Length: 351
Image 1 (tube, rainbow, N blue to C red):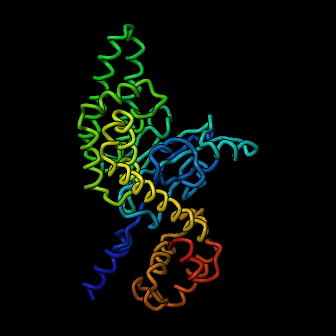
Image 2 (cartoon, rainbow, N blue to C red):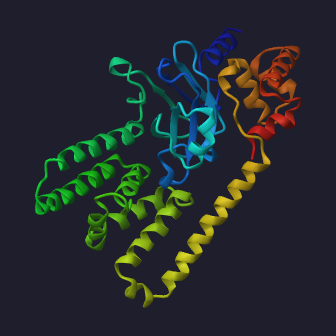
Image 3 (cartoon, helix red, strand yellow):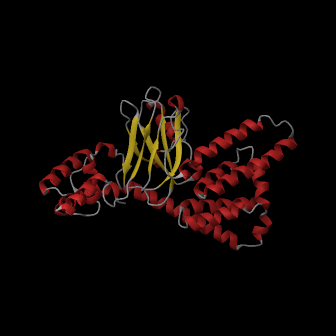
């Protein structure tokens, strides 16, 4: 009996046994940002910044203090790029703003996470929000640090007068960004750097093309992506773009090797098929706009067990409660999720 009581105590003092769950929480300034907070899954690094409705997977309503939270167990198990944002786009212009991905009155924070991560986004000095990520994984702060380096670079470029000086320092900043990305040992963060350097509207774009001719960094980045994320859309997108940029530099060499065109076409078809499959799956299921903050801890545990096809009796046994108690929690769960059956609950989370 003593052993049983110890096990019972551990069960209820630790996070729910064995279920991977993400938990992202933080604060927003309600005075300036009174609306909902959105969580987006970014699978196209060319749309890493902005507002895109097809990327939004959850929304949360902050409480009176500005506190918000996202939690659950429906995120991908491996690392992906995520964005939390708030905006004050008026309802009249919301669709237009969200259609082109731009809202002038918005604030966002990028980070890398998976379904097991717990992150918090507290206020920094003078109630500044989305400036800090508290996590045991230093990689989560990678995007914030890159933005700081880019801001420092832009300030320094304002002091470079001569063309020669700008060229020398352009090469130096390219190296600084690339070295920082490599040291983080997270190729998804390096994609953020690549997207910045290879942006055709960027002043560094021509320097990037020159760098691509002789620097094997870009091929090594592809190898790191293929090793860590072999089946990821990030990797396939980068592989296609890198091959395209190399073709711009030396089209004759590519024409002498027609197999490169075949590879490019196959990669493009593969990416398009993946995007089409994702859109079709998204249309088939209801949008996950439920904020798990509305669920109690017990209801979240029961939800996880329902998604594992556990019966009421099995749920009661694992949670040390009666079957009638489980039924009461399930009825409350149905009401909060706007469902009437287990199958409807599963359809919200299972693709």
